[in-house]
Image 1 (tube, rainbow, N blue to C red):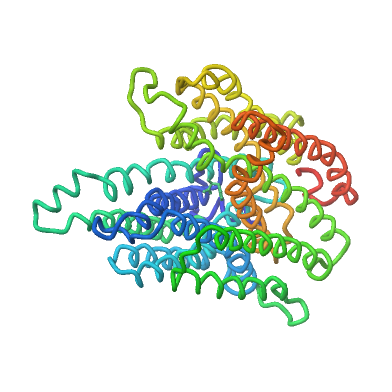
Image 2 (cartoon, helix red, strand yellow; image 1 turned 180 degrees about the vertical axis):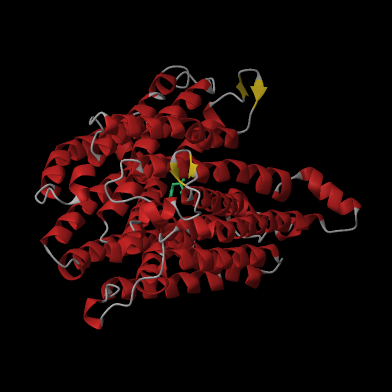
Length: 531
Ligand code: PHE
């Protein structure tokens, strides 16, 4: 029986979830809770590290907080590579999600304990747990569908909605209502408890969220059919080795990062830049080593090599997109803080409110996109995945262009602008995200040979890690380039980002035909018809 048939009839009554296999519901809520825990603690992590010890924080400098945040964020997605491989090779995706979820929960519990050592152990557990859970839960989604099922992109888009429901609720609950809440501090003090415990209530809420995710995953396990089952016994000669070059680099980086966090070396000025440069070089080497070994060693025949080449195109699209998109946390939050009125449509809003708009728009628009892809597919008019990426990059360019009138007009004259600008910015950038992020998950899954499904998903998250890294450095590096070219400081940065996005869109558009033809060499391959 095919996966899809198995998954759809797994519960014996053929029930579906919005016209999709019932297993999608299990994965939707598991990822919703996992992202709730992830974004919940992330919402106040930097503030917690840099708040003084008297107020219950770790009392580190802002620079150290930034570095820990960046290293932690990248390591989480980097660990998706071994996490995906372990699932493919030994335990299957389902068990990896369960074990990963339990490790994540203990990670948050550890953060909830007010001690420096517990904090460091907690972060390490989160890195390992998320590396096991995130790529594998995303892989199981695809395994609910046959390779040629036209509902797959739509399925990933619905799943993406779950991610964003978790991401939207998390900062409100873990950050605003608990960790950073003044009223909770007062309440605790009134009851003879240290008000500083508020932080740990925030971390604790993240742990409770992950617990809910685990319970519902175990409950919904029965709907998954064969999806994510452990691999069949493989002959020694057929085993997929974890590319040694990557393993070596990751081991060295892990020791390096571990040493850094453990001894909390406060790198200032030049030291910070060297550390950031080293990390970037490490990411570049890991990315190149991954593709070289995948293409030259792991791929078994001409067909698999072609798939790996198509993955490279998606990798380029993914890192470029996230390089722009993740500026939301840096460039755009500064823009919101300094250049935008606090009043929006009669309400007083905070800077972080604008960042929540993205999750809100995903939740509203994901169903529209899911319907659109299925409808276009039925009419035979669905763009290929690479074309969708190109459209997404044009949208990403447009999103930055929507802010130019504000920058060149009122802001250039020293004034502030209405929040409607950011409203439109986030709307357009969410349209871009929906053309790229869920589509990329779906297409990587389609391209992956079954025995490499988890590892290939790990590669997708490696691309997001590179994108994150680029976004973190772009503001400064591209900003100095704009200055060197004598452009307006912020508008100059935006011009260059727009130019970059349009160039990548063009490259992707030009590659979409060749990728399609390349995969159509063997038209009997289901993937040739649907990528
Ligand atoms: N926001 C989405 C998520 O958390 C997509 C994303 C994945 C963004 C990884 C950045 C990095 O799953």
